[in-house]
Image 1 (cartoon, helix red, strand yellow):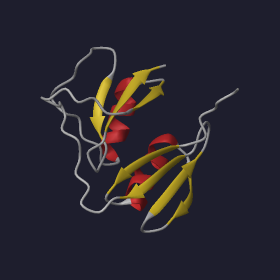
Image 2 (image 1 turned 90 degrees about the horizontal axis):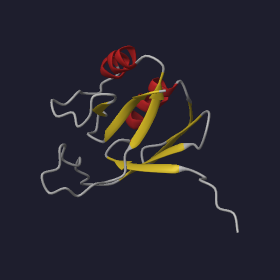
Image 3 (image 1 turned 180 degrees about the horizontal axis):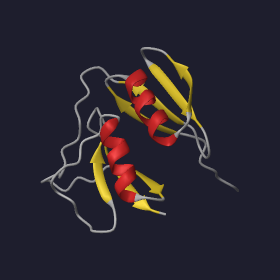
Image 4 (image 1 turned 45 degrees about the vertical axis):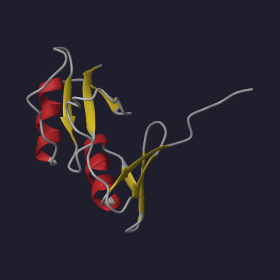
Length: 117
């Protein structure tokens, strides 16, 4: 039996905005955009974004230690990638658990990591 990753889906309050942010960050195309759902596609598995009414961002850092999924994105130049993500609307929280990578929060509050390739 073979299993492959077909797609990643992230919940949030605004699928179009999430698709625009991650599409610009990754250089991927928005292939579908509605109020309830949007999708980007490029190298690797596509990423979808579903609207969840009443959605709230996970805390960062999470004092309860309830780890959730997050994206690790490989970059060639960490400082340039952090600057680009911030230009697109990400925030750089003060708490950084490591020195080789950076945790950022996307415009709706999902944590993601930029990691040197």
